[in-house]
Amino acid sequence: MRFRTVRLVALFFLAIAGVVRAESDEPPSRPLLVIRTYETYQVSSDTLRIAKDAAAVVLKDVGIDVRWLDCGQKNGPPIGESQRCGQPLAPNERMLSIQARGAVGGAQNVSMGFTVVSRRPEAYWPVLSTVFADVVAAVARATGVDAGRLLGYAVAHEIGHVLLNSPQHSSGGLMRAVWSKLELREPRTADWTFLSGEAEAMRAAIAARANGRP
Image (tube, rainbow, N blue to C red; front, side, top):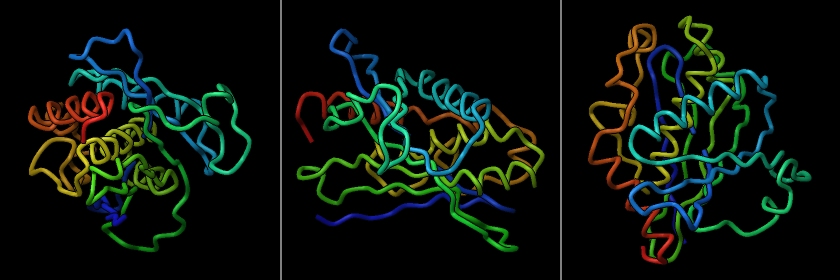
């Protein structure tokens, strides 16, 4: 299998990454995405709650419901719904790793996360996204924005990559490659949502995998 890694770059300091499972009683027009989260970087409970809420709102606005499954550390004992975390991924589940990247020095353009995509989706569905929580926190401090909200946008961006199975970025909206200091400080709704074509493709991807189609 061959894979590609995609990264989000932002002006002044930036970067990005999510997981979820669908339920049988969900209507096809509004799929449920289950996101298994694995943390190796200690994010405060308040920051993580704000981040999950922000990411869920972005996805809900384009017709995708989210349920979070806290699975503890990647190679450690699962917490919360431990039985579910120990089972193979369901068709509508994805994995989100929240970890540290380490020092980035004085770089103006930095990555907040990455997603692994598949060049052969007929053989392998992409499932893993990663967010660098320490870089997100540094960007939040440098720009004076809320760390939880920024983390949520980063998570939603990476979920977009894994659902679209694409390294491509858009010229506008949440899936653009560069997030500037001005955009972060003076947020416009249009900057933090998926474009209509992306939303349709993401919903279709969840439905297709649930039905066993590439």
